Length: 181
Image 1 (cartoon, rainbow, N blue to C red):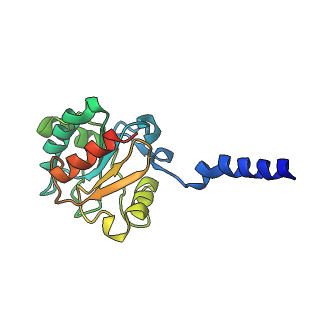
Image 2: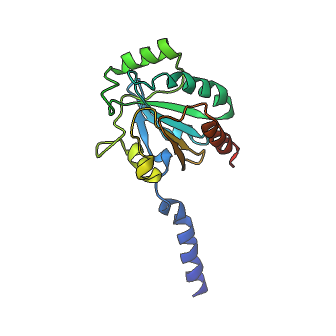
Image 3: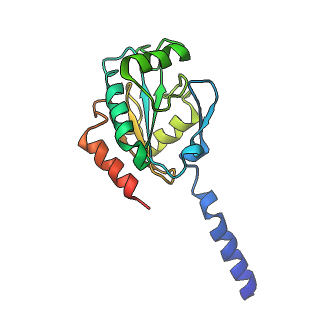
């Protein structure tokens, strides 16, 4: 009887990670080059994932996102831009046009995905998951909404469009994520 009890306990404990539900590493975006961008490739690194647009009043945030990337990439942070045409049709270009625009105008070197749906029923699975984790208020309402994911793939926090990438609120959260075991 004791052996059966221990077997059941060990079986339940072994299945706990599976019961915890998905994390960011369970999702794949499509890269700006059209190739799969599995988020698991960034395992062990916090990620700031930002829905972007080239024709938005907030587009100059690309400059701060690049500065954030340059400041923190050697410490382990990954910044991922996720172009989206969901808000005001402000990302009408092709993948090539988006990549060229970002490089020429803002010197973007951080990873970019292909154009992605980030809201509503057609949102990509990562954005559905992150939106559930963030709650109704934490879902993207406009371009340059930011999600911070921990080095363990767990959702940490969200930041509104108006919160600039180099703001103390974001950098403090990134510092904390980088210091986490």
